[in-house]
Length: 194
Image 1 (cartoon, rainbow, N blue to C red):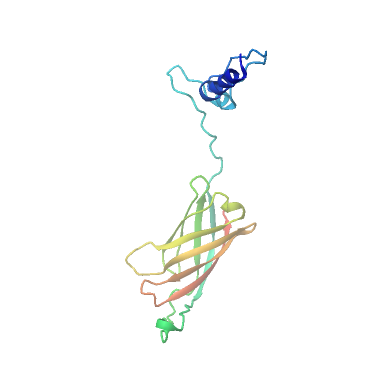
Image 2 (cartoon, rainbow, N blue to C red):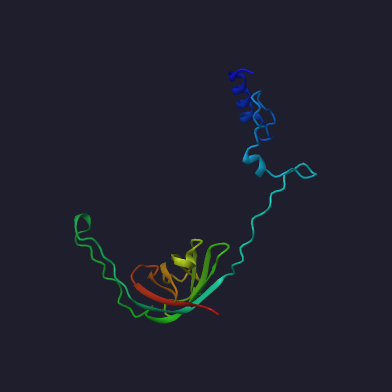
């Protein structure tokens, strides 16, 4: 066999026969070319003709619930003083609504990466919802939205962010009422429920 024909046979093995293994040996006495590693990993067809692929193992983690309290204080808003914004000043409403402490809790499901929870008290009845990273309970920040349980009451809504630590989850929420006249800065501290 000439070197060029040997090269063509090797090329044919790579292109067409690699999936089934190449048993051709050259006239130089070399060992048969083994099947590619891809063919070794290809599952064998079952009796019905379709390949059986093993499903990945199910995650053993269970949802974790975090409970605690929040403390709400007056918030502020900065408006740039220049250009078209010159002379615009946010005064806000210095009402006493939405101030104080209240209960808060949420559950993080490690399978779906969803955060779902509730809070009540001075900020009213709210729902907490978000998607968290797969490793959020190890060393990450979580973010979530604060939505109204009663969507017609024009109460406090906003966003929250929390930092996962060995002692729990601590963070803050920025809230405003539906008319944007009242802004609240809220701090929370949650511990995992036993």
